[in-house]
Image (cartoon, rainbow over all chains, first blue to last red; front, side, top):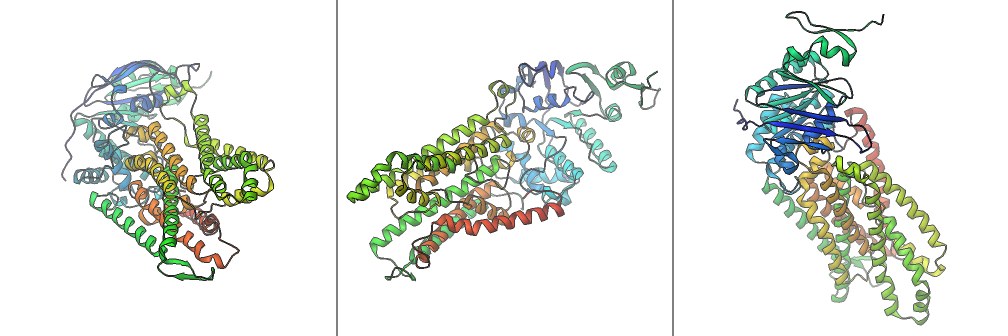
Amino acid sequence: MPTVLAPAAATLAAENLSFAYAPAAPNALSDISFTTRPGEIIAIVGPNGCGKSTLLRLLVGELLPSAGRILLDSTDTRRLSRTALARRLALVPQLATPGAFSYTVREIVLMARHAAHAGGGGMLGLSFETEDDLHAADLAMWSADVHHLADRPITALSGGERQRVAIARALAQNTPLLLLDEPTTALDLYHQLDLLDHLRALAAQSRTLLLVTHDLHLADTLATRILLMDAGHLLADGPPQQILTPANLEPIYHVQVTRPENAPLTFSRRTTP
Amino acid sequence: MKGAISPAAYARLWAICILLALAVLALCLFVGVGSDGKSPILAWPSADIRQIRILRLLAAALIGFALSGAGVALQALLRNPLADPYILGISSGSSVGVMFWLLITGPLWTTAAARSSPLLQHLLTQGQALPALAGAIVTCILVYVLSWPRRREAASGATGADPLTLLLVGVVLAAINGALLFLLNSLVPQGVRADFFNYMTGAISNDTTWLGLAIAAIICLAGYVPLLAASAALNIGSLSDLEAASLGIHISRLRTLCFVSGAVMTAAAILLAGPIGFVGLICPHICRLLLGPDHRKLLVAAPFAGAIFLLLTDTFVRASVGLFHGELAVGVVTALLGGPFFLLLLKRRSLWGSTAGGGGM
């Protein structure tokens, strides 16, 4: 199968990033700093409400930081246009909305190519698809196993199929940076394993993956680096073996964690004495 | 390939739409009423009738074009295929404007009738367009300002007014305008109310001028061209804010463009006639059924479909004058055709909802 040329690697950095939804409200994110390296698979983990999704929305540019900044290859992302950002950073959202109109799967996936043509905040330009765009969309649909659904309306698909369409769309964007928000939740076992293989292959092409997940086993086995968050703070940053330890996890998750040698993590509810 | 669109296919769509609209326009030019003033005839009109008829047909086409285009814009803005150009209070605002005009010029109407002064009467009917426009603009601005998130929140969230708030504020302002209308109505002298009734049902008058038409056309284009340029972005804008942002769309700018363009196009229609229902709802919808939801195609096909629809309905109104006491207002015909069609769509929508697991259209 022909392949699409992988883009040049890029790094994403957060610099003392803070965010509050309103000035009076407490910080949803406080003083987050990290820098990605090409080829890393970074899992962002932490309990509900720890700020994972807020961080993602900031990185994508839907929200703007209250303090600090986000750097893409050492350029402040606020100085980049939306389209310039979308050419280097793609997102697989947690629950891909079907939207109000019944676009076909191919139409949805081709939307990924819009940023490559458009200007003016992504608004100007009719952006007719080129042969390359069609080719990229086809490849992405094969990769995410939705090619057989290409002409089906998105509104007629199941949750898992829709999630795979979102994955295909992000792949078609062909960016050096890929953000994924709980990408495996709606997927069946086969497609979960399939996705993990694809993600490893993407990382091998020097792309950087940032993955928000609740699944600590997934984080442990897939990621090369963990960002552990709690209450809007970045608690720990490092390889899974160092970060996913009972000492780190027990206080924030309020569960009992054991990590036997060469065995997966196990969890149990803490019994109150 | 299905799902994609090439420049050649796009140009072809334009050509088909323009040719079709011109053909319908030419056909409608032949339709008239015989010398008895009742029975419809098909004949090449004499020069002076031709002049009046062309103006009226062009006005109908322009109104249909503007309303249908605005419908597409507002449906995209509100992420709701059932939105209508008047949903944001634009029509109720213009009605209040006209009612206000009738209130302050009330005494003049009776003077005009008493002295049978055609000039004064002409000024009064033509001048009506300005307060209509003013009322629409004031309501629009209010809807947008009231829907905009508080300043400090807007600094952190870059998405602007959200669709649900816009819709709610629009509905509330329409209700307030409705109450204002009744209030003003009880202040306006009896004799003038007939004229207002005429306006409210959306009649296309025979005394459109070339100047009025040209002004409306320019206003319509001012709204249409930016919308056309953003048509690919509108596709992406109909996903969630987060997804649209990740695909390179500046969502708050796109929303503002949609709102302003939709309002400006509706205003162009308001300048020529009162509120004409269902055009902005049905025509985009039929085009969506025929061509799919791609806004690049919709923003070409739907305005022309609107133009053709209104050309045909207004021609029916002219030809059917013998059946009724005087001409029906075209808004009556579009609503009578549109209402049942709309219900049919709702019915089908719920059927799709149960079989396809989604409510989208």
